[in-house]
Image 1: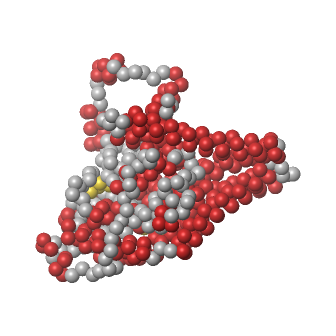
Image 2: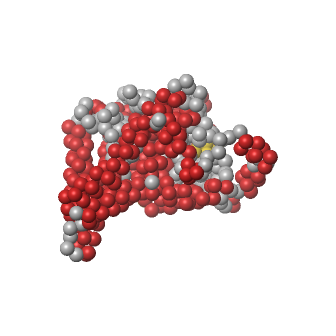
Image 3: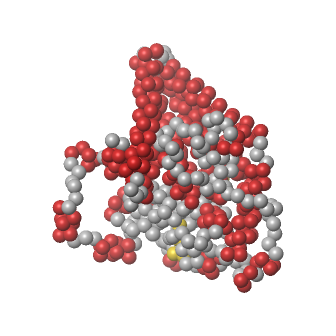
Length: 474
């Protein structure tokens, strides 16, 4: 049984880029706003700025937070029609070339992994230290490439349902599983459904900080946030593990009042630990052991070290791409979901909450085309290799409605992410005062502790979500 609700597909069938008439623009007395005043006219907005003297109406607001969509109903409806037309034109044109593309990606993943593993095993038998190092670096680099391609352009996109139209036996969202410790159904629930439906809404989109890092002033500051840079480094190195346990952490709260909580979490936890055992067993057990049996102890060590290094490289790359797509300086955070949110409102929220990364064709492939994060968020089930072909159309529509199209080189976007993480690790005076006032007194802490079950021994060093998953997996 699948553990996720249906995907959130885009549907439309209207002519492409239909121009707005004057009557459409004047509905309800609402003129199309310019980029300079669109936010202030239609929404309440808060900002976090390091230099109040620079906060003028002519400058973009740093770390913007919105409480409403910054366009009128007439405008979002018209925008929705235009985006729906772009979507439908691409989906109607899908065919043999698109199928061949993803099959070539799959073949590249398979053959590059096989070659890499042969090189890693052979590295242990090289006659000199120099030749061993060269072969090991080649094998590790190729394996890193294979794992990145498997994770990004293949796994992420196939599991989004981008190629379900092919009706392929394994390149489809219902059967494909990728080469990381997170099972596909758990990721599809936390990502395909929750993240893409409630994008950048605090406390609804759990990818906003991953329950670990403070990235907006809508998240209350706590002393542990001082260690945001350190926590970010740990998250980046073990990103696949954070993704793996992410849905368990979400589901504990999501199903808190459900009578099926235990059975649902038991199913998810067992699936998670089964996948962890398979992945760990493969990369750190079976493959090194096989190389050792066939070629000796040195081959086992070169295979093991290469697998570890490739997984870390893949984790760092994936983390960087994901964070650059969601947490740049101008990525908007929302305070709540409008109960009457339309498809056009949803489009606007996706655009303002996403950031693109400029780069070469190979760069886009290695990011799984998530370098076109804006296009991905408005069309999550469109084959990602098509995003580049529609990016100019998306930019035209965004410009037409005064919506910022946030894009930049990787170095610029990455620097903004790091600045944001560091900035929100420090409280301002109001946040520090609020924390001090709300801090429970010593007597209350002791009273609460008397009614809680203390965690003793080695368990206190195990993250709570891991303990929860082990509990439900029994």
